[in-house]
Image (cartoon, rainbow, N blue to C red):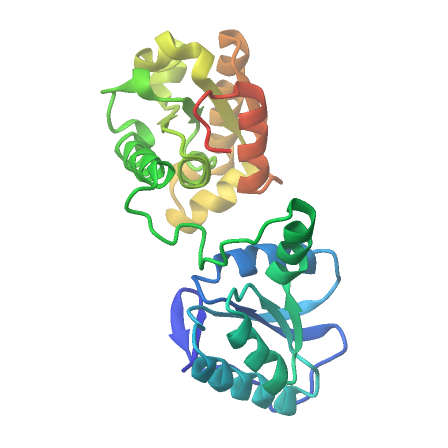
Length: 293
């Protein structure tokens, strides 16, 4: 069967030598995509100082698939000498029961932990449907997210000025300061239409923001970064170039930050922040009306 690792299907990787106590193989098991199990599981694992090998196992939706997966988990246990951790968001009780009964991993039923308690508290049964969008055909929130992603791609890196009045957030900053990944994250996770514009030498010469976005100042948020980190990132893309030189990066960052101050727009450094943190701060400060929170 294999597992999804890095977006590709692989046979399970196992070790021929026992793992240390602070190392575990972790399986994220779902009868859907496995994204919820992986996200929630990693949030929990972050509380522990361990090194983990991670395997996403989506679409485990029959007892036969559960048995086949259990065999792979058991082989991992035998090879590594440590019980694998299994984060499960399996909705089907029968499939979950097969996994529990036949695998030697530590199975953590993430849905059951909360769903059963909520059923008791609310006095109603859950739908037990697989996946957040079991049927996306009539789900307006899903279609809004797709529209937001398309908008953000069209307005990436200042490619288009059309429809900027529809933008809910406009990100500015020097090249490689984190604008594109943040734009797409806001679109995919929150359904926001986000445009982003690079600050370039012509903007520094004019000492003004790109003219197309000036009328939308209340939607603008700036991203900056330390020159040292910017130079590292740019050197990976264009090694040995003036674009990546530390002196040039220092100049661009200084000019960009000075412009943001003069323009009175909000901004933050992305140097040590994750995309999730950056997005949360932007949402808190701009508070777009249509964010699908």
